[in-house]
Length: 264
Ligand SMILES: Nc1ncnc2c1ncn2[C@@H]1O[C@H](COP(=O)(O)OP(=O)(O)OP(=O)(O)O)[C@@H](O)[C@H]1O
Image (cartoon, rainbow, N blue to C red; front, top):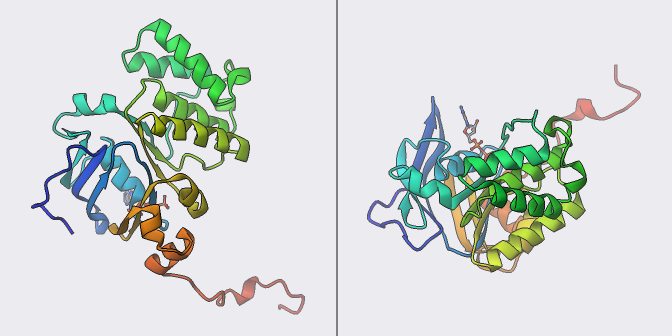
């Protein structure tokens, strides 16, 4: 629940207090408090429908909360969006891109929109295309990219203005293992240099290996939060997640699905 008495942590990369969102009858996020330490690699995990995307959208200026606040490095996002948004790079869930642009054009567009000059945009675009292994496809229309390539160009677009905090919803979904490893290296270097990364993911193994901190969310609430080692407490993160969230089912009930020749 909300703790209005605990003020936001102004040293944190992200400090969420009492975030709340209702869609009709459905309470998607029911009072989330969370502090993401600056310089951390923070994983947000939770079952489908837990409220991760809704919480991240409210934390990054994409969806207005019903209640609560989000501070980015001490700046109140919803009170001062013009100051807070330059600090953020965001890869939203299901992002719609201008996919009739080429990869290179899309990065140019993202850089200019962020107020960078053309030379800086050109230099950073080439660096990012190389880092994402997309140089050979720089002049291909994004509509013709694969799902993984699209994810990578969107991630590059989120990084071009060198934000202090990167918030990435499922950044590794559909990305091949080699590209995923390259992206992990890029993100780890970014965090080592003082940047903060927040990722939502369903892949517990990846979060356990990659993240310093984790928050487990279910039913719109934070169930546990802290360093990955503290949260998993000697178990694998996956086992701890299942303990916390529950919901393992006996695999009965779908008898009709069993392929047998004697079905009528
Ligand atoms: N625009 C919307 N209108 C109505 N209900 C919504 C809307 N967005 C989200 N919800 C509901 O809010 C709840 C939380 O959704 P959300 O997308 O935040 O979950 P999630 O943790 O990101 O899930 P997943 O892991 O499946 O992506 C779900 O029950 C969802 O159906």
